[in-house]
Structure formats: structure tokens, C-alpha cells
Image 1 (cartoon, rainbow, N blue to C red):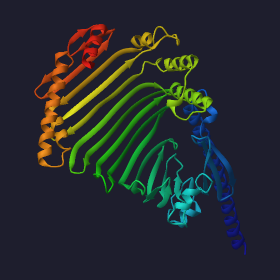
Image 2: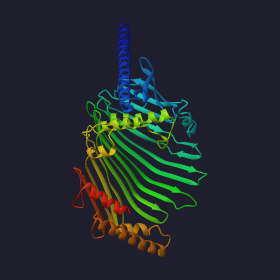
Image 3: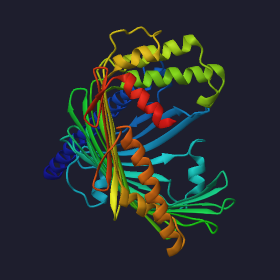
Image 4: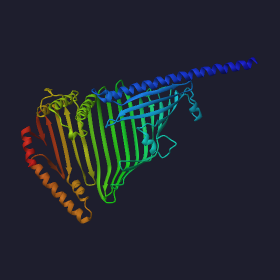
Length: 482
């Protein structure tokens, strides 16, 4: 009897100890939720701009009911749509506390962990149409399974259910997909990979059908140091096909997008690259196009503040299109002043290289602007006064292959005879324009490629190696336009 009593006592003590441990885990998890939400709100307010922090999206822990072995959390993301309507996205988490969460044990995962979490989107007026569109009515449109380890690591697997819906006369069918987020560095770093099978959109009135196949994406976000974040993101699409019974089918293949960035404090460096591996319209093979760009030392707060100020002017005048905005001299001065703030860190903007390539050659262009804060910072100063002070150096390079352009012209023909005529026309037009540009000193010709190289620096132009004053450059530009 004493032995039995002793065993029972041990069990009670162990049970009480485990209950206390798992209750503590629940408390720690709640603290982690609160920390993450506070950090997210701080970041979103930063990106909302200096003038309108109240307009930023916000994340709130709507409720947190903590028990001994599990907790229930509901958190809500609120934002404002362009037309001023409130948007509300709500997620519900069931959190099974560590060190050995019951849900994890049932799933055959005996390893110790901080928490095992299941999440699902909750219906709100903002997302109810998504719920209505889901093919599998037994599942919410978005749900996830997450585990959090003790060492600041974890993994979250999200599932997007297939859905079909119609909006503005366009029927859209989504195959659904999934993505995985690996967490590290106290849950601050993320490594995301995901895939969606297809998207089909049909505009019955216009007769257009667009099919997007095999969408994949991956990205990392790394907290390098305090207020320093590095991101690398890439997405690929196998093909986009646009069909219409009365038009040529347009097919884009091997699409890719890459965006890399680093933020230190308020300054952002970023590079972007878009690639269209193959472009075909009907029988015409139009080649490939790649578009690249780079931005250095962008003051993100100043940039967003400028955008918010412009939006506020549109709201004040009750217009929705920039074309309808009537700026007063005072408005223009305010926008100039806020634009000049962007120049304080001396940003560098590069558009390019932009490359259009086919089997016969390629055309390439690149523009780089190295900008500085003007010495005469008077916001009332005219653009003609500020521009020479703003642009420290401008560099434009363009090269156009004759054989490439001739092939591009010929591809638009419907038969061999028409393609031959178009090829001859393309060659003739190329020769005419290049001859005129060459005569004015704007291009040089090497083999079958016309090249333009213009550098503007210290209030002087260098065009293909020849130095010109601004007046001489403008005279030649006017002659070209005549």
C-alpha cells in the first residue's frame, strides 16, 4: 500500500511539474506573440511615412486565451483599401504548448519543442468572397501548421486551397498551392519556398483567356544587425498564354523576377531583374527580353512621405486620377521640398541593362543617374535651376544591332513574301535613322551595330568621345527633331 501511495505521489508530482512547465511554455509563447506583433507594427508604421502613420496597416492580438496545455490566439490585420473601405484579415491559432505538445505527439513528432501551432483564416466581410470561392468547403482558404523550437528556430507550412470565382466579368480559377517558411535567429530570419500550379482567367465578353502555369517562388530575409535587413527574392513562371479566337496567341515562356535588397536604418539598396525567356505572337518568334535596375541609398521614409503627401492632395481635391489633379504653386513648392529630402543621401538610380535579343543579335540600353542634394535648396527654385545641381553625373549607353532589328521587323509578316518585304523595309529604316544620327555625332557604327554613349558631368556633355557644351548639345538635339 505504501509503495502504491509512493508511486501515485511520484506521478502527481511529475504531473504537476509537467503542468507547470507547459503553463510556463504558454506564457513564453504569449510573450513571443506580443513581441512579434509589436515589431511588425513598428515596421509597418515606418513604411507608412512620416506624415500619415495612422494610415499604416496594423496587426493586433485580438484575444489570447492561455490554458495549461494549450492556448487559443486570434490576431487581426487591418488596412484601408484605395477607396477608403476598411480591410480586415483575421487568423485563429490553436497553440499546443511544449515541451511535448499533445498535437505533435499525436502526429508522431516526439521531439521537444516550444509549441505546435495550427492556424486558419477566419471569415470576415473582407475575405468572405474567398471563403465562398473555395472548392473544398471543409477547409478555410488559407491554413498552416507551425512548430517553434527552443533555440529560435521553427518551420511553418502554409496551404492555399483551390478556388474559383468571378469578378468584374472575369472568371478566375486558382489551382491552389503551398509554401514553407523556415525560421532561424530567434525567429527573425526567414527562408521561404513555395509553388502554385496554375491560374486561369477567362473574360467571356472580350473572348480572352489567360493561362499561367507553374509559379514558383523563394526568398530569404536576414536580420544582419540592428535595423539592418537583407532580402533576396526570386519567382519563376513556366509559361503565360493569352488566347483569343480573333487574335494571334501570345505565349511567354520562362519568366523570372528577382529582387534583392538591403535596408540599413532608413536607407535602402535594391536590385531588380525581370526576364522573359521567350516571346511569341502567333508564328512570330520575337526573342527574349531582360530588364534590370538598381537603386542605391533611397531614403524610404522620405520616399513614402512624398507619396503620402501627393495622395493627400488628391484626396483634398476629390480626384482619383493623377491626370485630374490641379496643383497650386504652393502644392508644387511642397512637393519640390519633399523631393529634395530624397537627395540628401545622394541616391544612385540605374535603369538597365535592358536587353532585347533574338537569334540575329541584340539591342541594349542603360541609363545611370548619380544624384546629389543641390547647393541651392530653395524649394521655390525652378526645375531648370535645380536640375544641373541635382544631377552629378548621367550616363546613357545604347547599342542597336541592324541584323537583330531586321529580323524583328520580318517576324511580323504572315508569309515568306511579306516577311522578305518587311526585312528590306526594316533595313532601310535602320540605315536612314542611323545615318542621320551619325551625321549629327550622336552615334558611332561598328560592324552592324550603332552605338550611342552620352555622359553628362560638371555641366558638360561627352557624346561618343566628343565634348559638347549644353548649348551645342541642345542645338544638335533640335536639329534631330526637325
